[in-house]
Image 1 (tube, rainbow, N blue to C red):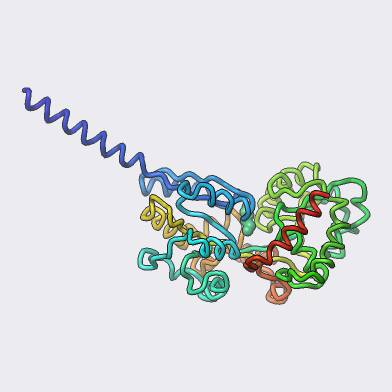
Image 2: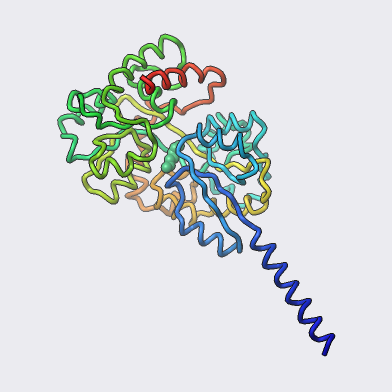
Amino acid sequence: MKRFIIAILLVAVLLAATACSKKARTLYVFNWSDYIDPELVTQFEKEHNCKVKIPTYDSNENMFAKIESTRESFDIAVPSGDHVTLLAQKGYLEPLDKTKLTHWGNLDPKLLEKAKSFDPGNQYAVPYFWGLTGLLYNKKNVPEEVLKSGSWAILGDKHFSGKQKISMLEDAREVVGAALVYKGYNINDSSPEALKAASEALAIWDQNVSQYDSESYKNEVADGTTWLGQAYNGDALQQMELNKDLGFLLPVEGTSLWMDSMVILKSSQNKDLAYDFINYMLESETAKTNADYVKYATPNAEATKLLDPAFTGNPLIYPSAEYLDKCYMIEFLGDKVKAINDLFEQIRMN
Ligand code: N2P
């Protein structure tokens, strides 16, 4: 009898130990806000008997600062191209073992080629979504007449004078970039001449801007607190689905183009689970469901085949080749980025 009780106790201890070790498996995916379908995350948790936590950020700069200060807190991050380069140069990224990424082949080879511009050899980055930045507006507050030019100049329109009803992103590359493109410069031009031209446009726009913020505009354009906001296309489309008064335009002069990628941090304590997660996100069905939810263009060729033609034919998500020709990928500028950051600070602190 005694032996029997000891055996039972042993089994109980073993079971508890297994449960604990499983409980310990928590994956931290540091992601942009509103950038993943939560049901997919729940599904992954069930399939892999783990927890996935998704702390969020609203700019590459904030993501980078957080990773610098608390690297070991995250397994995966989702930086834009220029910040993939920065994180890799700092030595914070784990080179990808492609043999563990069985769905890598689902990615569009043309986009992988493009990704080499910020990640030579596709060493670290698994393309997640790509998109463009434009203007989200509320038709109740912004008449057709004001919008018809389709230009970045709308930000300086007299309709907004003295009203402070515009918001721009809290992102130096996007804000200064919009002014650079509007003035006919490359978004990556940090020369004094280009920045002088950009600063002239920004000084005018800034008079109408109430805030440089990448989050609040989403609800505020909908509720009318803000009339028009610089916005990422997918975020804008998510809001438009909820509110028929909202519209979005891609400025005629062109705009920024970015590709965000999943990367594994070298300091990750859960690399196998991180590979499982990335592989899961690369499955064609998962990537299709995720794109449907977040409303960004997927670099996953197999998922693209599954998407509704109304989605892939939407020019606000997949603009024409002619329009894309006018857009600029935000590139890594090294130390030259300081002049752009300084201009942004100067404008927003004014
Ligand atoms: C998601 C915003 C991601 C786009 N909310 C910025 N690269």
